[in-house]
Image 1 (cartoon, rainbow, N blue to C red):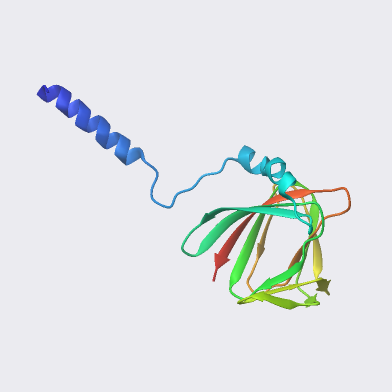
Image 2: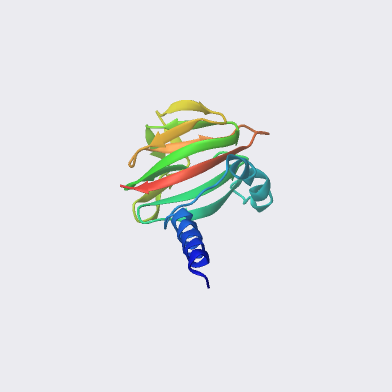
Length: 155
């Protein structure tokens, strides 16, 4: 190989390697996230929800959820949730006390509802940060649906 051609080849290879995404990087377009409702709708369970884990990292994970009905009330002892609403509408109830609570795993409580919480409407583009140890529940009115991204951060 001629010296000039070798330099071009090495430079092009170095530029390609330098342009690669760093380890642990992930990207999901807004369009692909909004379309998860269509993808998950056929997988909905008896609780009117379907979810898909998108990625797991050292101290956080990313998943998407599609609902056509109310979710269970829940509390995580050491995990904060960040919801990013992609499509549809619902109501987020936060705070208060979980009613009918039962342990569903280490540091996880689920229940029938929340007593004394505050309600916040959820619409596309909304973001909610729910700290660990905070009761929360997503409500979806009959005939409505909602798709949202959840980032779970271990505290």
